Amino acid sequence: MSETRKLAAIMAVDVVGYSRLMGVDEAGTARAVREHRDAARPLVAGRGGRIVKTMGDGLLLEFPSVVDAVGCAIAIQGLMVERNAEKPDGKRIVYRVGVHLGDVLIEGDDILGEGVNIAARLEGICEPGGILISGSAHEHVRGRIDAEFVDLGEKDLKNIARPVRVYALGTGAAAHMPLARPKPIGDAPRLSLVVLPFANMGGDPEQEHFVDGVTESLTTDLSRIRGSFVIGRNTAFTYKGKAVDLKQIGRELKVRYVLEGSVQRGGARMRVNAQLIDADTGNHLWAERFDKPLADLFDMQDEIVARLAGALNAQLVAAEARRAETAPKPDSMDLYFQGLAWFNKGWTPDNLAQACSFFDRALLTDPGNVDALVASARADAVNASVSLVDDPISAFAAAEAKLTKALSSVPDHARGHQVLGIVDMYTKRAAKGIAECEYALALDRNLAHAHATIGFGKILIGRAEETEAHIAEALRLSPRDTLAYVWMTYAGTAKNHFGTYELAIEWFQRSIEANRNFPFTHFSLAAALAQLGRLEEAHSAAKAGFAVNPSFTISRARANWSATSDDPTYLSRLESILEGMRKAGVPEQ
Image 1 (tube, one colour):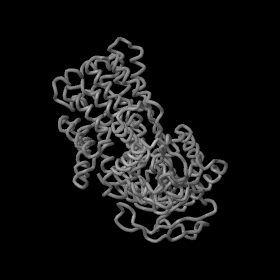
Image 2: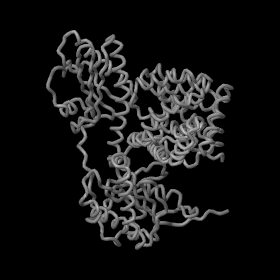
Image 3: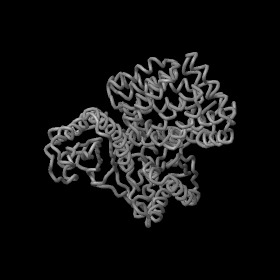
Image 4: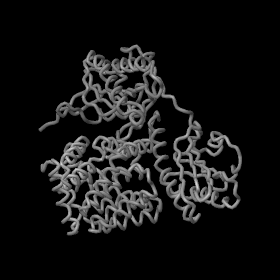
């Protein structure tokens, strides 16, 4: 059958900082994006255009002529200026637009091919509020549209074989409203910080060694975070005991973040406070307090440092994701951090699809981005492990191929080994998977995820009674981890395997309180409740699961779970869980 092709004027539109806006106000942002889109529909229809498809925060449109496409782009940006006029900076919906005239492949109502890709690439490098058009589009609109065109020269666009000449469109109607953001500090690297000497609040000279030890150990442990740049201990200690301007420190040391804190002893207790500050603005990004009975100081120091390092890792990633969302020209690492932000929101089909999209874009921008490659493999493994794909075996195989490539390049990538452990566990190699996670801990002792994954692996080898201890260790290291809800589900699953359903219910409810967007937890809770005869509650739990994963079935769950292990103890315990789900109203097919 021959392919159907045609020449088309293509417009790609994207919302700037969509992830950040959704993180602040998910419902409000979704409503605003929808309302802006609806307001633009008459402009599109009036120029004979059609919306080919929507992609969360993005749009792909097709027009009968490139004059109509560029004219519509100008009208839409002008409309957005008007609609944003009374909005505060943090609430504005700002578009980037790319327009190209090129050959496309028609597939039903969809259009595909290099022409679409060029429009999308132009949108990706466009300034917020602006419009970029290709040279081919410019040839047809020059002299036909009352607008100024700035020749930006030829640009190498990712995965486009030849350079593309690019023009920026500048008109009064399309004048953009840049997002308010602080001026960055020089050339401060990502994940760059200094740990200032913690203050000894009690003034007790006997505690000074403990206070300094916390600072030094944190400096060492944070430097193990991949991609981090941490100012050395000797430089940091030149600020000890001084009143300092944190913004000035950021400028002097060229770091994005400052960690400061204090230690205070009161009777038989020790209190440690820590704050992470954005050195650009001086704003507090995160704070944590540890208040513990006084015990062996060195053991206490180890625990505090481990918990702080784990929490800070997550907070630094979140901060970088927020920065990346406002980057006018996001690079591979910007896209990687935005993908992590979506991944950490919860393992729903939509969140994982968004995460995968950002990781794919990061790898298109830089195929050598090992962190993005590991993260992409991790998303593949999660999609397969929680029954979100029809062919989990292929998904795990894809994940393993990516991890093999990543670890051949960076053999000491702790997260890579931990994710490979997950893949091993879900492909009947649980013992090997546990060994991979143990090696990950040898590389990074604070990788709480590795402890939790080992706990899951113990279920697969018929030693579910050992799982809870590993989960407890993971939660000790990172009690507020973005994936703590998954770990709690592992613990509940272990209890389900033993038929201790009351204890399982406690773990599942804790998990749901932490994050309601993990469908597997709801279905597992439904099984436990049904096995206790609490059928009304079981049906409600299953209903909550279907709200986030409507395609979940017993047959799919059985296929996925039985494919993970040949251990007879593990397999013998699955049927009671599946029977509980059946009682809760989960369909067979």
